[in-house]
Each structure stands twice: as structure tokens, then as C-alpha cells.
Image (cartoon, rainbow, N blue to C red; front, side, top):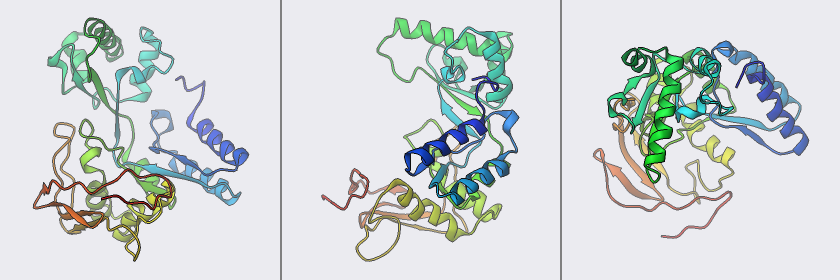
Amino acid sequence: MRSEDIGLADAIDEIISIGREAKLPVQISHFKIALKDDWGTAPAVLANLEYARQQGIDITADCYPYEYWYSTLRVLFPKTDYTNIESAKFAVDQAIDPAGSVIFPFAPDKNYEGKTVSEIAAMRRETPAQTIISLIAMVDDYEKKNPNSDDVEGIIGKSMTDEDITKLLSWSNTNICSDGGDGGHPRSHGAFTRVLGYYVRNKKIMSLENAIYKMTSLAAEHAGLSDRGIIAPGYYADLVLLDPATVKDNATIQNPMALSDGIDKVWVNGKIVYENKQSTHRYPGMFLKKATSNYEE
């Protein structure tokens, strides 16, 4: 997407307009400032959101605590012009840092897995812009020959700054999320412990109590879930026993499923599901719907 087509400010104005005209709560999911030209604008963005809230628009956000996202190479070309060198140059100049963006997986050539775009470009003797075009072409060819294949390619794209993330996480109406899955990006296994260790204990951007509130009660409120998010009679017993002095994330790009330190036990619906750094192989969880109050064993 070209910066002259639509920018961050335009996108924020659009979602505010949706909230105003539809008279509905709106949430910015995976709140981030990704394009390099927009880095450092978090204070202005948050001021705009606060002004909208003062006008009665219920606008909120969720944010995960990393400087990189995880998607496919094709996401770098929102106009789907995968052979356009100008679009590719814009991607590596604005959307990602090619020296910090890692390709994983990459089924067409396993030698590229775990390497940055810049490293692969050096191997191929190409510019980073030409390399992402070449990689997508390789993926297209592979998928044509292997139509039923899964997890063909992915990129962990570095495109945010810690300074902006700190401000977005600190906004009183931002809840903390993980966008969790079962691997790929370290946020799946490390998002919440990264906040507690790095942002709370080390950087002290917020109190431990406020961080936990953003992970639990505020998150449940934003998702429209009842009977969850606080410790109180009548609420489901979803609990975590942790050590504030030692809790920290260990998941990395290279080892995204590494277990965190400082988590002693986890209860779901009142039953222990994790202790001694391993699963208890009990699965008392349930599918959650907005304002659900039903529970089945």
C-alpha cells in the first residue's frame, strides 16, 4: 500500500467514523505503527483516540508486545502486484527491516529457512526488493506442483519500534493480546510473560497490577465475555500462579515454543492444567461466546 494512498492517520479516522456513525464499540486489533514514516507518532495517534472517546465513541485496542509480525510474503504486496519492483522497494524501505525479517518456513528451498531477507539476498546476489519478488515466484511454482501442501512459506517481519509499542501498551484502553497459535511467532508462547518480565519488571512502564488487569478483566470486557477476567464468587476459576521476580519469556524467533520462566501453575475452570513446567493433560476449557454463562464438563 502506497503511503500516498492511505496512511495510519486515515485508517484511524476511518475506524473512528465507523464507531460514530454505527454507534457501536470499535476496537483496533493488533495495534501497531508499522510503516517507518509513521514511527514515533504514537502520542499523536493516542491523542486522536482520546479525543474520540471524549466525544462518546467507545474505541479501544489490543496490542501484543513485539516489534515484528508473522504472515506471508504476499502480505507485503497489498495490491497483489507481486512482480512490481517499485512495490517491492516500498515494502523493504517502509514495511519491514529486511535485515531483521526472518523467512520461516520456506518449503521451496529449506536452505532459506531461518535466514533474514538480507541474508537470502546476499546468497542470491540480489537486492532485498528483488529477493522478495523471487521468493514469491518460487512459492507460486511450488504451490502449482504441490497443490495440497500446507505451511509453504512465512515471514516474521520486523517493522515496529519498542518506543511506539511501549506507548500503545500503556494506553489505558489497550488490552494485552497474544494472537497466539501453536508456533511460528514467539508471541504464541511468550506474549504475556514478556510484558510481565520486560515491560513491567525491567522497563517499569506500568504496575504489575495494571498489566494483569489489561490481560484479564479489560480483555474480557473488550471481548464481551462475562463471568471471566476477575477473581470473584460466580466467576470461572481461570487462574495463573506466577513469581513476579522471575517471570519472563524465553520464546524467540529461533525457538518460538520455548516455555516461559516463573509460571508455577495454571488453572482452567478450576482444574490444574499446567504445573512443574508441563501439561497435566486435563482439558476443562470450553468454547467462549460473547456473554456466555454456560459450562459443560
